[in-house]
Length: 532
Image (tube, helix red, strand yellow):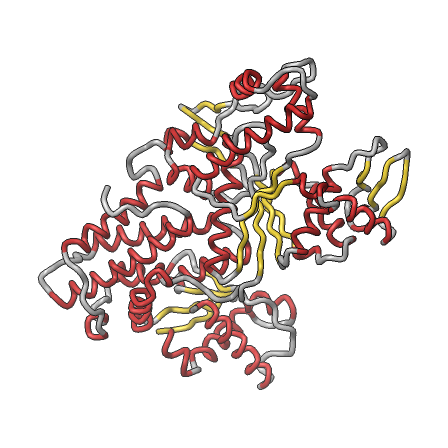
């Protein structure tokens, strides 16, 4: 992809200038390639000279111009760029040749649904764990964020050649199950409320122990509430992992023994503690309480060991922002067990608030006033729900505007994007594109045409960046950018006109746009309608 080629050219030019002593020796920092906000400043840009200026004494503007001239002198650069310039305070800007863009249109049409797929993962095993809500009630609005973001990230990693497993961790034992039992029995220790509790109360017999009632209720909730909701969300988990199995197979006691043998534990007041503070946690953590009950943290370490034993090289977890302190202890447990703590990436999900008619809709699973995911999907549909949850980075707060989500106009970004795809399909139904020849491609010279191609060829770069930093909201924004660029092209350039060769060239560009837009929507799990 072009961004990588630019990075290679910059690295080569710097080394050549160092060899000629035009630049002093220094260790090359990471080369960042970005898109200028104003296309008058180029199609790609790098701030590498500004980074160099922090390491050695140079004139950034002078060096950026020297570097630009050196890069453009390479024969391969002349095939890619019409010009490369140095710009204050120290940027190197790249302007793509139209001929290069025309070739990329051919590439998109040839690769079809394969365009954007990369081979960087080498089938490395990656585990993406998300949702993992306790089986104590139906999935609610807040579960949608990790659900959709986790699913889309898994799809992105798959498209990059990783062997991905989508996993749901079922906390089906312990304190919350007992609390669920009390709630179903409606005794003095009841915690959870709501219509589903009333139904479970009528369904499950009286007089049993709270733990037994909770266990039976959790099984019903998982089977009849959570799994159907997950299916409606368009998510297919490869593994539903039961916490119980860690105990049934001795996994929890096994890791406690290992930690004891390694000297990572101590006894205090009848409890067994993990020395997590020695491993960069803020305090030590209890593994076994004084009453002999194993803690959730003990289960978590056993679960980590289980994942590594299954051959995963990277573990990605989506957790609520209130679990921030969970990260350090988890990595400490990982390190103590002898695994690579850097293999764990934890993505924090900030709160989601639902607004209707300008007022926040309050929710709480325990008081019984909450919005379930099923209710949300009934209101807005799957496509809208997915897109709205994907619009913002998981680590930022999200206000879900129900009124906008239900809007059937171009104010709604989902409608706007899908309308662009439907319009493209309408054009292609009228007249199918012929062979995109080199003769025809030269006719694509209008600014709106070239700008559209420049956006289309960014797709593999969007995928690569997302696979590296997990910022799946980039896909949502990119789909809007493509829709914007296509609508501008459609308004400024008559696609089907009186000049056959120009019509064929523009139809080919329209087809390439359809391919990229549909590939983007597919990755997000959003439909690409051909009619609206």
